[in-house]
Amino acid sequence: MVQIMVAKFFITISIVSLLAGCASVSRELSSFGDSSVSSDDLAYASYYSNDQLVKEGKVQFRERNYGKSYSLFKKAASVYPNDPMAWLGYAASSDHLARFDNSDQAYQRLSSMIPNRPAYLNNVGYSYLLRGNLVQARRYFLKAYEIDPANETTANNLELLRNSTTTIQRG
Image 1 (cartoon, rainbow, N blue to C red):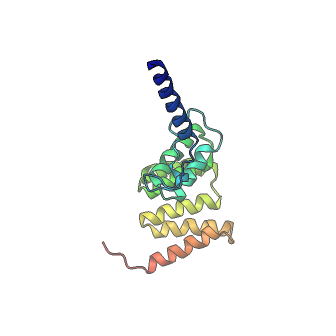
Image 2 (image 1 turned 90 degrees about the vertical axis):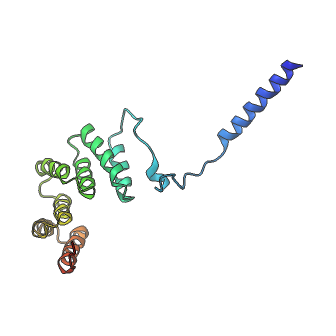
Image 3 (image 1 turned 30 degrees about the vertical axis):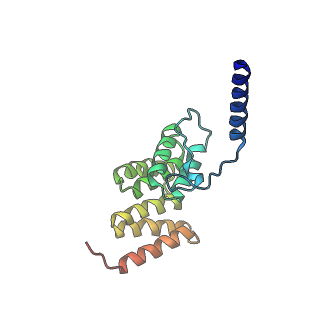
């Protein structure tokens, strides 16, 4: 009799856990306030496909999770030290965290990889804009404009620079 009750108990537990495993879990919301796409954790992974870290870093950056994007791009730059996208993401994330020492190192590294690309020039210019050095920012934005006058990012950055010079700064 006791054996039958124990067997029924284990069968019930098995069925309940099987059904719980089949239940669809919505990942629309994250407990951190991020979207479900940006809450995936890659810390457990020891192998990364060529662009997995960069892709995840871009997602975090678009979500304005600059601390997370910083970590992912830093890891990507260490795993793939010759990948300009990893260094650009690392530099941009560092800029948004006001870690200009790190972004300067990344831009120095990029200066030998992609010195005359609009993406590089726009990022360096934006870094100077964030620091309040509008003269240097303009210099880099204009270099990017000379290379690609139709570049939308460059046009937006020049407009942002123009607005920065007309906005009153209060300390």
